[in-house]
Length: 579
Image 1 (cartoon, rainbow, N blue to C red):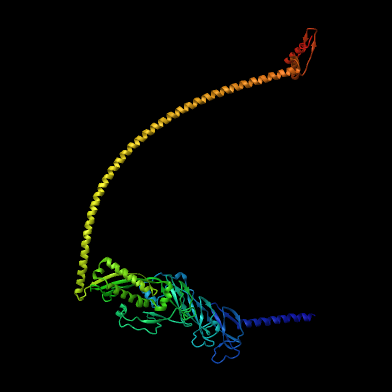
Image 2 (image 1 turned 30 degrees about the vertical axis):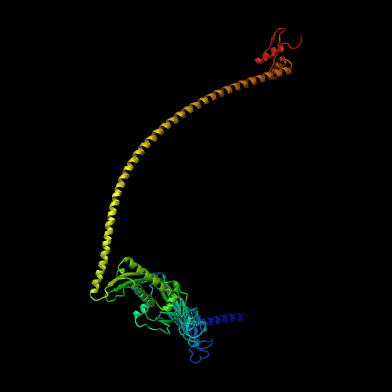
């Protein structure tokens, strides 16, 4: 028994030591410590060999690099079967919203950069990760983008949004791209780079786009601007539906979007009204529009057009023209020059100097440009004529002098007319001023008259008021005296009535008492009996002593006077009784 008890503790100690040794070996040889910010790529040393040209294990039990990775933490793997490599985690920056600078409009330099695709909004904006799978079966021919669940090689349709990811660098490549940022005042036009082809195309006239099958080129720019030659014809791809290749009809509103740039292209378009000018910048760069007037003079006008794009038509604009530069170069610019020449040639030279005619020309230019551009989904707010030059048709160095003479003649005629009108207005003003002074004097007289009359009326009213007040006071005093007299009379009547009432009451009380006594006397039968009753009722002596001293002598010692009276009454005979 004791021997067995000794063997059991020894075995337990041995097993504990063995367990501790095994734990130490496992801890130091099998432990995988993955620090924060890193992941562990597992490499299987033993297992079934990989197929030819395959560098990754795609099935359980295959030797080689495994697709699954271990995140930060502590793991235990048999070092005879496994090896591992530490790799950095893939981090997609989220940006810093406090640094974002949203702008509402662009200057000319920024707008040029935006059209060239080189402008970036200021701030630390978020990024996305475009993932490319390097291993797996190849995608069908022509398919560049694949789904993550397919396991095929190619660019994954899904992107990595801001965050930290365990990405196996042997399986995937992650390329950072900026997220799509659309500030306020802009929209994003989305173009699908892959997808099905639209069913049919539409024909647009006077356009020059990328997808062109036939485009006749005009002989020169002037003919095209004036509308004299055949307009170019282009085949325009229609707006696409979701899943189709091409420009989508729905645009992106202001915000931040995580869009795969390998799948979709986003064109940022400024919404609202912009300015397009054809003016003289320098002597060498003169963009004014030139045309002959109705009288043969050469006219040069500088025009500024305020134009804009409605968000509902942004996709159509980008789909048709590609960018804003083409809108200016192919629509607004040519139409502006053509309309200026067509309408301006119907005006005489002096009409462009005369303010009213010049404004009429500007209104006609604006209306026609609005009509033409509205059919192309472009909004025109105003076409403003800023600069006008009139040159002689002879040209040469004398042209400028003739122009100055024409302007000076017209200006002097208008100045003379204006001077005459000014003098007439001055005379009218002097007349009105004299009339005004006369009216002022009349007003002063009328004011003094009104003041005097007002004083008299005030005095009359005050006197009449005082008189009326005195009459009212006298009448009030008289009425008070009359009322007091009536009150005195009423008081006398009240005293008389009250005295008479008291006398009547006293008389009635005494009469009632006499009647009462008479009734009592009658009830007792005689006055002597009533007296005896009264005496007996009121007689309450404490002690009575009688002394008889003979006939005719009455001696008694009474304590009260009433007793004497009572004794005498007792000695009197009853006279009511017959003797």
